[in-house]
Image (cartoon, rainbow, N blue to C red; front, side):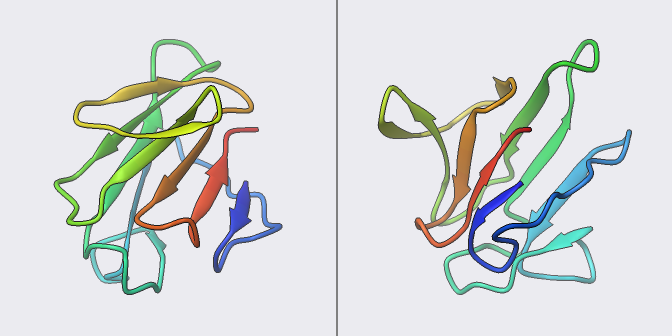
Length: 99
């Protein structure tokens, strides 16, 4: 679900093969039009089972972050997310939550 940014208030279905988020709509299936977002910024895909998703930064310039105990942490390797976990791409203008 979009929390802030162009997808705020929207539910975003994740296809079985995952979703690539980034500024370039020609190579991403979830385009995020923001100057803090890389061409191909991050990928979100299903982990083992249907209850978790894996978030992977794709070498973005401004980073991909997850919320851990009220602190945003930049990820450097794929991270497993479960329901109600929040993540953001680049700056705080592009925040999402797993629902």
